[in-house]
Image: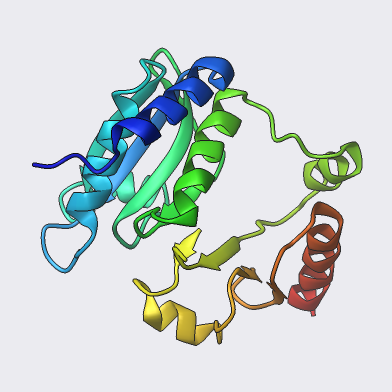
Length: 148
Length: 53
């Protein structure tokens, strides 16, 4: 199967990863066998990305066969990516979810997400951190995007 | 992130036309376009007050 990422992109991404990836990152990928047009491409994309750095690891789940895990991560549609931290056997869930194939502009957002999670820090201002610490209920943010 | 074309039902539910389109707590708050940290925070606070009513 043809590679999705050409040599040029791989080189640029590798440079960014070598400079900026710190702690290990786990990409949990959720797919479905039917009714998921972009599942195969998404899986290939993240596998090609993960091959660029040994700080990245991909685990693959099926929405229907792995219901408990899907439920644990609040995943209900595919393709879905959970970008989480990994320390040995422990997964650190930062609540970062991508639904749909991260192509076009969203590819660089994905790269940034991986780097963000590997740094284990939100980069947010102190007032924002204080506000978030005092939250008493969940805040669900959904950002709708298109590739172009 | 939600890819708007792949999840049309969801996009329609929130009236997504221009992107990026950010919803907070399933429509309690909305931001269209770039969402700088301060603005997003204000909108989250507003949305939480709306949800509390």
